[in-house]
Image 1 (cartoon, rainbow, N blue to C red):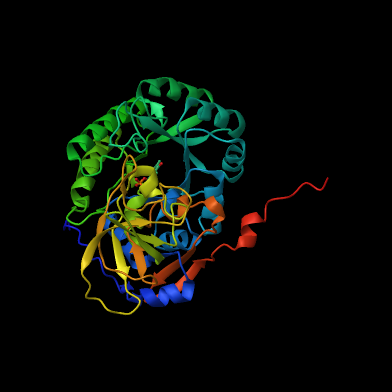
Image 2 (tube, protein in one colour; image 1 turned 90 degrees about the horizontal axis):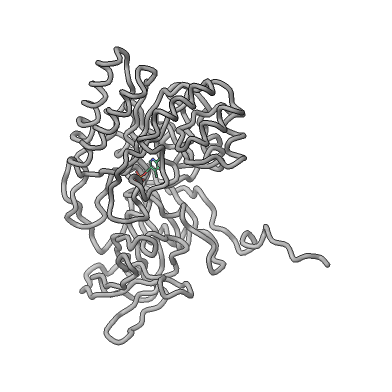
Length: 423
Ligand SMILES: *Cc1c(COP(=O)(O)O)cnc(C)c1O
């Protein structure tokens, strides 16, 4: 465990399946998921009592079905995600809850569905407690707590502190407990999703905050959730998370609560990225190569409509080349990788703030393929139809079989919900 990541800039296969075959069978751009990587990650988390996949990271039905068959449950942050979970075979309720609705508000439809299907709710605001209590009747709920501090460098990904919209402010816990009680709701779970990652000093603070909140809730508590935010290595040399140590810190917290309450407290983990990021690859074809002064551009048939992380967060993705002619010995050169959109920010090699940078990649020809790696989390799920580009295909690889799990959208799909008024 805990080895440094390595990435190669030439790639001929993904999980034993030829990239050239994948590209010719499914065309480009196409997302490919290596099912075995997802299962490896699940196995690394088996120490936790419950592994709850944050499906927003990658919610294709085939992925949800795969994790379900390996004992993983899910959370849902919208009515659509509840619908998906059901379509992938998750029961609406049970122990532990197969689906937990986790949000800071109910839109009207989600509230209706949560009540109709009796789905467990992880509540992120006092208003949710009231709305659920008024229309839903007595039930168990969890509370998501904002402990008053967050973690992370990006304002867009910080999930705690005064700037965050997430969870119930830690000082309002008592009043929310009273409100829950008024409505016949029993608080059985507590949840914090702060994302300490491998910052163990910070993790200790989160666990301390969890313990304080748990003692305020008292012995109705039967489950605590560590949330998600487990990091994965995106760059060469970055270490992977020491999961054993991460578990130990949370487990010690849980054990102290078990001792005080005198009954079992289940420990949940709620990863999104950790399960799916490294399993995902976006295959795209180089369609033009040009020079702009000193810069060489590889222009590919995928854009930020397919993968938004670079433009949204300046996120770094490993990129490799699959030469069409099979000649794997190529010198490398610094290049900028861009997409087809009419938008100057449509660049895969950029840093936060939108600064274009270069990447050392092998010399390429038009018609070669680039594989954008570690793209299995917040990849396809953030795709859009911007510039009227159809959503990409998705393919699941298992035991060297490639099966298409989403058809590429057609141009007809793009306009199928639109009307020109008749008069
Ligand atoms: C997004 C999210 C997660 C997963 O986050 P990752 O960083 O992908 O692990 C877990 N829990 C909640 C409540 C979330 O909103």
